[in-house]
Length: 363
Image 1: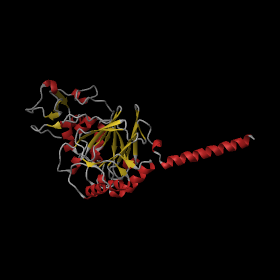
Image 2 (image 1 turned 90 degrees about the vertical axis):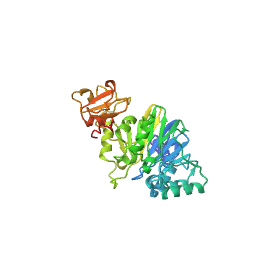
Image 3 (image 1 turned 180 degrees about the vertical axis):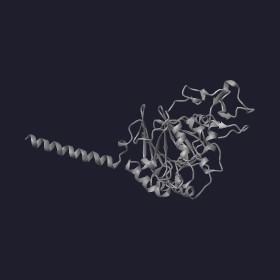
Image 4 (image 1 turned 30 degrees about the horizontal axis):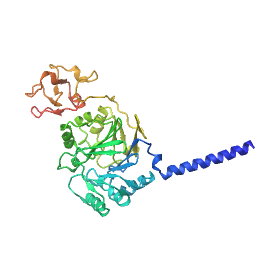
């Protein structure tokens, strides 16, 4: 009798296991998105970007990779139980960001399509044509636009102008969920980064989607020191032709103590903000330098090696206010109270300073 009961119990447990497994495979959204949490999916779409945001019942897809990834993205969404998107965002018109969105818009119910003001191309024309055929509202959110998104807030920060380089026209968004902040930059490069910095915007973020797949032309020192991300996600293709991410960018991220997640090495990366916990589904590349909370004021700390330099020994002199560095003999040196003395360019770069336009020190 005891053996029979054990067999019955085992049979029931096996049925429960099969039923639960089928539920998970069916991709019901509740299985993947805890209540009152923000879940950010950095999808592995090769050499491109595609990011899914889910907060309670609100959904947003930022970019869709190249056209050939449209079907894979749709499958990923439907496996999660998502057949409707509140927002689809094409950060800019390059094929590796906007290309796959045409299939998404064609196959799923989409409430809003956000585009940037930039030169049209085949990818953007296909996308807008599909949206218009389904009467989906198309608009460009201006800087300062704020959205309520589930239990999160989305702020559009840029672009602040139209640029010669389409990458710099990327829509820039900051998403805040409780104490956690995520920054999405498309392919924005240093020109647009400096425009944002000049506005003294609140750019600090816990997680940075690294611009332009980790290209050296993005994620400049000053921008990176201002954002000060504890975690950074790079979306790029395995063994891509561009060599992304570039060594210079990896070095900068390491210098600020940011843990790095790469889709080419880890596949799809999922970050979850729930209460006071921020977690990832994968283990990132730990930096060799410690992460430090900063006030972005360039005030020297006990860990800052610049404290060892003096007026007599300094190779460069930085300005705490303007965040510019000078040669010691420059005619535009700041007053003594605003100076920070630096031994070498490594210290200059660690503080994210920009070279003076008068004395033109080496960079």
